[in-house]
Length: 77
Length: 152
Image 1: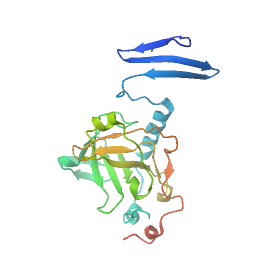
Image 2: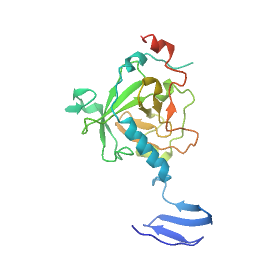
Image 3: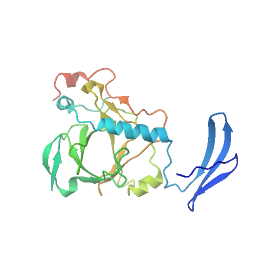
């Protein structure tokens, strides 16, 4: 892993087309601007982690006998 | 083709039942092929069973059967990647989590599964909507009465 020290206004260039700029630092909060092609998906790390973790919870096999009782549910009006 | 499933036992699966997830699913990046299994013709529920991992299956929910105002904008790039268009709109599912009882079921509103039903390619899309919960309770007022009576 590469660790870099940057000042406000300085940039990090990743590959040919991703640029990360440090916009401001206020206490613990660091504001970054990320310029990347639209097909590059960018997520806050904790949101991606939360979804991965929820998927793992969802994948736990459980007893779904009751599901049959719900199969006739229709759109709520 | 035969698939082993902890939930369903041995499944004989036709080619057209497979759904490709070229990017895997968050938490399961290497799982790229699932089998789509409807629960019942009229049911808002369905399943995704991993084609390689017998223990791995997801319960899916049709969001529009339960949440009338569920909506999101699919970015053009994502729509293009999945080869979706107005003529070929996506099928949308939510992954459900059942920790103990059915009544406690939650669905992930923030990360719907968007599927191209024609070429059978799908992706779990992460939305940028702080109002959508990862653990939205599907039955906040208990199971619907018609279900408790036994459905149909």
